[in-house]
Length: 132
Image 1: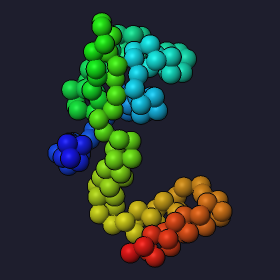
Image 2: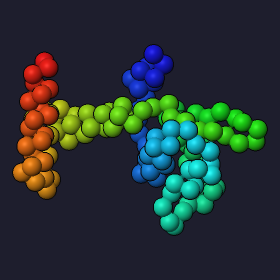
Image 3: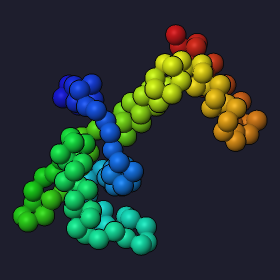
Image 4: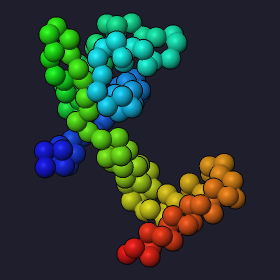
């Protein structure tokens, strides 16, 4: 229940660098600072930069940590699927007049999807229609 309430009340905004770090935490599920730094591609950010980002993300309610000795084990409070669902719904609302069909039209026409990829999307949509 707490997570659902958090998602409803949460502004769900991350900067690009915070989102990059959040992707690492989502992938690792639980991680110490060393694990997080190891997961970054080269050139790796400074430890202090990552520590600042972790604090910001924790303050925003996206992650929490368990203190183990002098170390902190970080874990996500918001699931990746929930975050991106909120982002896509915000995108549809703000840029496509809250019209999913306008968004779908733009997505189908303006992204370089192959015929096969479009057919796969059509199957997904057809399956969702059958469920409803």
